[in-house]
Length: 395
Image (cartoon, rainbow, N blue to C red; front, side, top):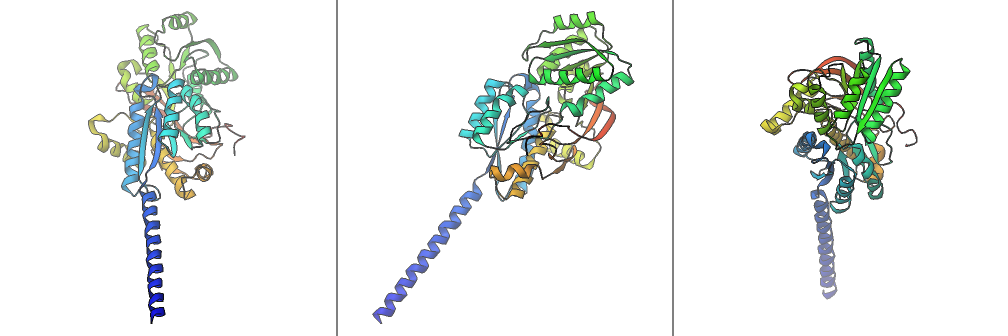
């Protein structure tokens, strides 16, 4: 009897131990499931991008709210970690380092100046985190951890230059930009395109990214008497100061801006009227997906809503693309998520988005002109414009 009793006691002990192990495992699993997936958003809350950054943050917030309301990603809620990169290199280094190594974000999804992006990329490589860059930019920036869901000059420049040459009969062009990677990269591409198609560039001038006095450049512009001007400045504040000074100087030739978004155009007031822009998003895209997005933004932010634009909408879509990649990978592990980012897609306000062209995406582009109320009247659209050769060496 004692032997039987001993066996029963031992059996109960093993059973209790098994139950305890199962309980501990379940508790551990629950703790992991409860830990949010953290998305870092380094963005220019100060500096040149401060005009547009609030709209980018709002777009990210809406995407996260929608995803969390439907159960999150792989059963985990999503948390945003926003950091000010100061719109430049020094601030970006601090923001990237803090988000990756202190906040321990699972991914970075952000709209930034090219100076900020270039400064942050070595830190992305060191931290080995997925990075979706959501800003239009000068193209051909490649990193094994980076994907881009915004336009490049191969998609954006032709509509404006072709329109000026064919419809406005422009033969001579004056180019003005901010003196950094984006400004110079965009205008180098533009100059080559103009000359290849029989036009002539009669001026090519730059001001530091944080510069605000365009007087001497505008004097050179007036002396050159071009048929049209094309500008490429750091998005936000430089757009405002340059356009205001062009108008005050009485410059009235056709004006194409390669860097202004619809939100910034609205903030310019009457100064923006007549500017030609080319981009992948305008608020009057007449599709159910865009109408639903705009309604959701209005409901979420009300009177505080910043105008959705070609810098904020890619942020919204990129968070959904990251969600799709994580779900396809079944994990937030970088080694699994990186290849999945090229395989997933999202149908959003801009249409079908898939970053499968050398880590970039074909986009429908719109040629438009800013109206008196800051809205953009679409003149012509171009479907599924290929981004061209961007990162052929990356698999």
